[in-house]
Length: 97
Image (cartoon, rainbow, N blue to C red; front, side):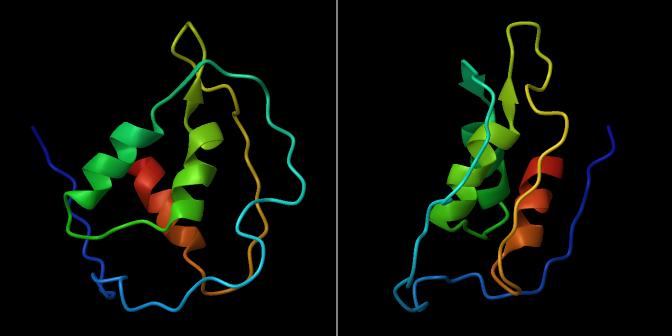
């Protein structure tokens, strides 16, 4: 079995970050209905690397990793707009791991 190894160099401790300012939930979204999501499992697996997620990243992963009763992704395409340097790429790491 081949294991995937990612070298990610960033602060592991997010506890020293300032309180978030502004709206932390999307002002607009179009999300298809779904029954289950694999986001919790993905976040737990990601956090085993010693890194942690922001709450908005966890919330964004719910619909991204939503599945239907056949085990297929509910959303084959997913887009989001977030200002620079806020952890958007981290969401992709979590999904791909």
